Image 1 (cartoon, protein in one colour):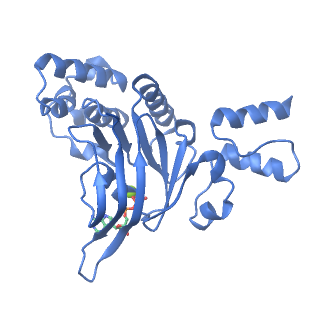
Image 2: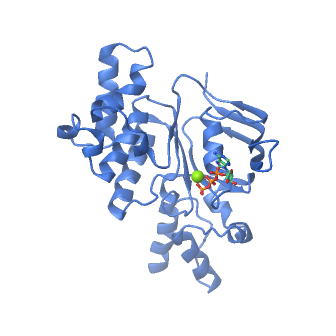
Length: 270
Ligand SMILES: Nc1ncnc2c1ncn2[C@@H]1O[C@H](COP(=O)(O)OP(=O)(O)OP(=O)(O)O)[C@@H](O)[C@H]1O
Ligand SMILES: [Mg+2]
């Protein structure tokens, strides 16, 4: 049977019934299937992290229903993942998840090897203590430690906040290869669209806990007011195409992908 994450009329309040009660999600309906690549956009406090926690089955909504596949099929990579390290070596850190899935020792080893290789952590560092690794390597290890669960859904919360340009390129390549080779579903939160544009097709926009849009990159630009009022922007490539179209250039700005956008520039240059 196909796996899916299904949220029906989900609302979440933190500290319900107190003076601090905060509505983090309000009436969210969402269906996420296999082999999807999804960007989750929204300003700070919109509810992105809360939504990912519900989708991962870590937070039970106060109202509505969240149906989530079990048994390590949904993995959440946290905003500051390296804070959670506890094992003596990188290898043991990445082995913790599969060791708790009642697999044989051989299967655990194979998954850890695959996960550490997939994120490009150099093999000579697999026996190092996690905190002896560089910041970028620690982020890779944190990703490997959820990938070793071999999830079918990978939810990434702000994976490039505070990461340099090379780190962004590396992660982008890792995620693209992962999606192509394994058909894993990616859901990636971001304040800014440029990192997620080349990696995703579907776009969710959260506005104060409500799902304000469930759309595609091409259609997102049809309602410029939506992103603007949230202080968000289209990816730079699409913004430029819209500006060129405004000035009368023969381009079609509503492109669904970076490849499509680049093709428009190519045509324009002849
Ligand atoms: N653990 C918590 N306890 C109480 N309130 C919380 C908690 N986590 C989040 N909130 C509140 O819920 C709302 C949504 O927060 P959430 O962290 O989901 O937003 P976000 O879109 O991820 O923001 P950011 O972009 O800053 O990470 C905010 O009003 C926030 O203050
Ligand atoms: Mg957040």
